[in-house]
Image 1 (spheres, one colour):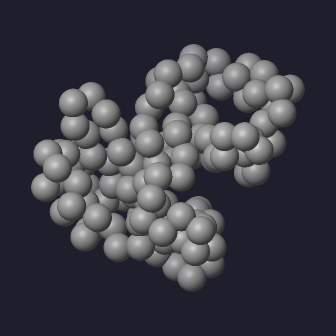
Image 2 (image 1 turned 90 degrees about the vertical axis):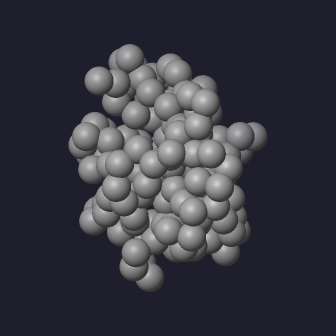
Image 3 (image 1 turned 180 degrees about the horizontal axis):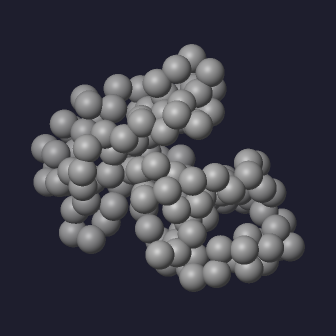
Length: 130
């Protein structure tokens, strides 16, 4: 598994993107809505590091409640998998708890993603390889 991006939860996506651009980040495409999760996503990159800005676009978004805890902050690391199912099973066997079902991610070419929690590390995301 290799790091694909750092997920950064923000209340106002466009304003956050502008701040990242002041730091030299470049947008990797347009803002993409994810209707399943009720979020908007924008990827930015600087020096090989990719940040995913995630913002709720509905009150019942999967991340709306997280804003109370994280408030414009990083909240997950995404790992790209060469064998999605094998990596998911290995992590589950090692104490990671799957918190949703694998679903397509519109902002990443509809590749499947799944989120897991670890009591010592917090949330991670697994991304199906190309």
